[in-house]
Length: 185
Image 1 (cartoon, one colour):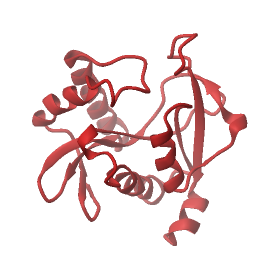
Image 2 (image 1 turned 45 degrees about the vertical axis):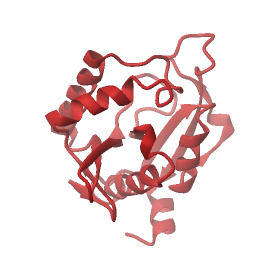
Image 3 (image 1 turned 60 degrees about the vertical axis):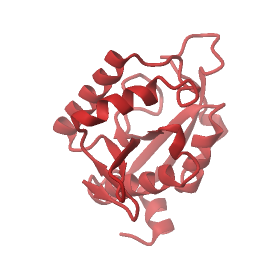
């Protein structure tokens, strides 16, 4: 389990499944993804995330507000499963329920996940990517010290051709940059 001032990043619990399914079925939360997720798809994602923790020792942590114990979404590290010139690598990502947007939770949780990536897993670099239209997530990427080179933009192979979500931007942060920004070693 990882902690921040306001949040717990932890393994998934059975009680997380229903609110996670609701989050994945919210059109606003999923606006930058090709489709909403069914309950079965959402539960399958949790199962894959948990298997990744068992395999790699990291993954997409369930996030809860420490003061209330309320599940609000996920933040963490994953290994992308598609082919691209910048892969293999480790990605940081997040998805929060709409009532928890605008409170700094994604940035706070992502900073903790990056500290884990660089200080515990000892990664050299962490990536993040999203549809060019997802300005909220790109703002989080900038706040956590990631940088974006427009030349690294790519068409996501899992998004159908012709979709306005196919074009993605790639953000990166190296361990050296992270440590310089945070003063941690």
